[in-house]
Image (cartoon, rainbow, N blue to C red; front, side):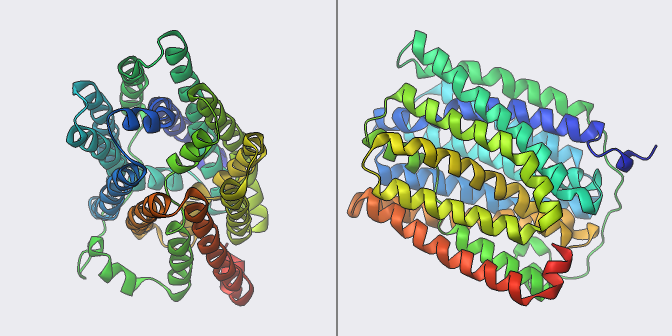
Length: 398
């Protein structure tokens, strides 16, 4: 039996388990970071700059390593090194509380993600038929998000028994990170052919942008506009904190979001295969607008509960489906390059989005900052709607 006759292959399972353990580790840290950073002197603007710059550095590197992966014809060396570097970055949090050390830790963690992401996604593409691409990416995202639900619960238990002991949380988070590194050695290298390119290296971005099809350019532009609105989720947690939610309550909210995200990722992937990637992307943008407008103007803290459910649907419709969409519009010889390019422009936009949101938050108010994100997302939604309704090629392929 061909490996592609099986919808979820052994390799897809293993890649998904690696992501699950990595997210247990990462998401143990994520919901407690706002409180931890504030205890060592970070402001909202400082948190925005930290998150945005770390994401930008790492995401910009994804294009480079995606290109390198395509050029070498190898995937797994990048995947293994990337997960190892992320584990080392988490371990650096145990070395001290200096802002520079925190920045280096976050950068190492995210740089590891930059190395591994595009080659890992190319492995998933190699293990799926084009008509099942959304389902496979949705399954991987669901497993990833199960880990993102377990991690905050583990952090909650640590802080329940040892309040304020962030060092314990950082220590426990290292274990699943190490497990994920070990699991990568069970994944076989998928067959691929090195691609010799005569043009300028595409990781310069400008050369690659010139080479892509007009349709893919339109898709990239729509995703970029949205990325400029999509600041760090830490701002939503900070908004909930300002409305009276305790640290344990914040973790509970984050778990609710991740459980919803995990539960919906696989069915949303199947929906994307049936109705099209453009339809699912537009649905996600609509959910994002509702959530950010709700967080901006809500007065009752309990209103955040249904909004987090809607945010889980947005997440299921966004990153994984965007990658699946792009993978349908490019050839296999530039798969990792294209996915890396998307991650790269997304990361630069994340720097601008988080920095701008932090500045608006401090200079005006949380309501102004979150409202601006909602308005910019509306522009992205209108752009995607225009693409969906004017491009027959898009409807046929996506």
